[in-house]
Image (cartoon, rainbow, N blue to C red; front, side, top):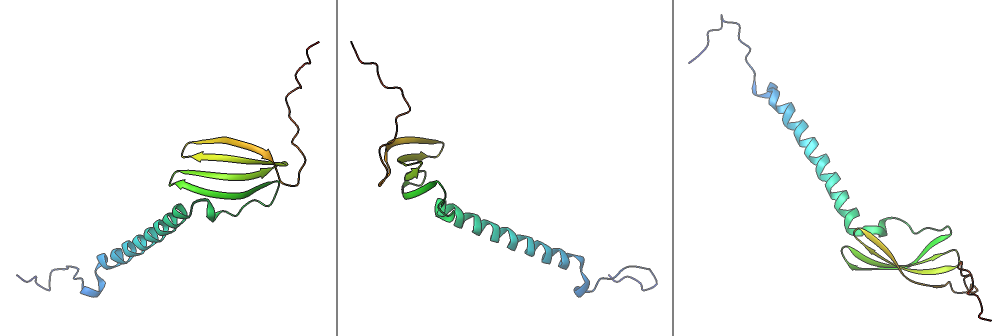
Length: 116
């Protein structure tokens, strides 16, 4: 069936279809989403290694990953060396010693009373 040329009808040619611009936009959005997903996965797999260790009073001496959600960290802070265990929703202090080259750490608790 053909339409008479006397009837005013818009005739799109294949190079002016409106869906072509939409396809290009959708492709660009898809590529941007894939790029964001790739960066997110890369950061997720690298974990804390992406962030630099602190150079201030808090210093990470060593870290090891036990499972994807559990890790151990040796941290020096204010003259103390701390062994910290990290889980997905918890952090625990496991051990504490004086940092190498530092005198004994002062105990903040009062000394026990001597018996008379």
